[in-house]
Amino acid sequence: MEKGKLFFEQSNPWAEIRKERIEKLLPEAMELAGVDAWVVICRENASDPLAMHVGGENAGGTAVFVFNLQDKHVFSTVFSPWGEVIALEEMNLHDQIITLRDPGEVWTELAGYLQKINPERIAVNSSPRNIADGLSWFQRKELERALGQEFNNRLVSSEELVSQWLSVKLPKEVEIMARAGELTVQIQLGAYNQVIPGKTRDSDVAGFIRKRVEELGVGYAWSPGHNPNVNSGFPRGHAAASDKVIVPGDFIQTDFGIKVFDVWCTDYQRFAYVLAPGETKPPPEALEKWKKAVKGHRIALAAMKPGVQGYDVDLAQRKWMEEAGSLPVKWGTGHPVGYWAHDIGPALTGGQREITPPEALKTLRPGQTFAFDGFFAWEEERPYGEGEKQISVEEIAVVTGEGAKYLISPQEDLFLIPS
Image (cartoon, rainbow, N blue to C red; front, side):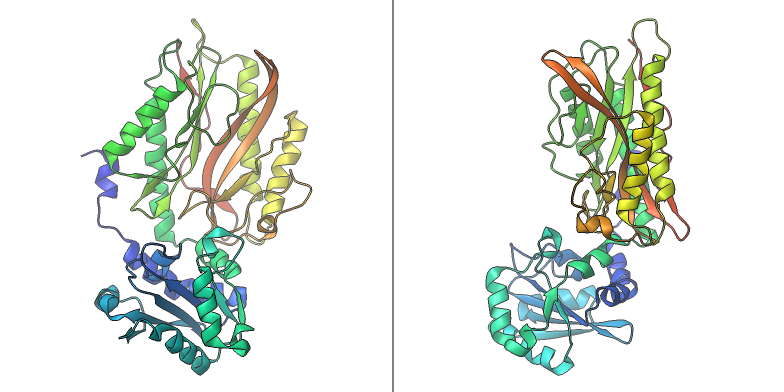
């Protein structure tokens, strides 16, 4: 059996991990966000994006999940249509399940329960950030109608709660992401072994990677329309691989991520250099660009510590880029990664913008995982004038109690492709 299948065909550990996350991580997240209760409303087909995190993925009719913070513990209650109650009980995830015989009861039952527990601040999933914005317009109106003005005044966005909760990963989750990272890089380097300079196109490399994804039975961390993003020419942003032919002197950049157990994502870039006939190593100017990008990544890693703002990590690398003679780049240094390739939480960015986004001012906490780049950019001639090329070394690291560490061994040297 292939390496990827051997590990990722094991039974899915999500049910146990989800339960542990609610018990161990949700109370602290609610305290940090300053909320006493969290209400998540799920339904069939168009459910809340966070349904799988609270056990609402099987909702048929409207089901409401309430998490109440009590003495540093969370007590969870579900108001569910009778048809899904058995499945909820078998999850062994929630403290109390209340069966609704009539679907219309859900709003009055919820209102009565909230009045009974009397929380001062009630978080609901309404937010400019899409992950914490699952409450529909109709659901919001029905909720407000049932609660009345006094309790409507207590409703707040769950954005900060969701950010604090989802951004931190349990050690078991970090281990899964590390194993997935090893497989991600294995696939990328396997694709580079197939390259024939002067014949292979960027799209051929992408095709090989997609074939391996299907063979191994894993998923894509983001849309397969531009995953992987293979680029041996000028930067194309988040776009599908083109039919450009790979030639000597090219840096090849592959930005690629997989999803395992239909839960955890990776996001890695691996770089290759195509040698000219007779070359055994890249020319000094190419190696210098690569080494400067790698150093920028190591500087960013060293800046990642608990209590540090994401903006400070971004700024540390940008100071090095200026010193190293790099052009500025539009991308931020890094982003949270885990349940989505671009997860929720602090962002390692802001130094390239006039206005710093709020995510960049969030502080790092142990257990948070980030995909981030080491940049070096320069100008190069192209058929219709000068253009910018860049190296963006991308790895994933986890914040620890003292600093941060890579999930897998980072790329130190360019993958060399002979002609």
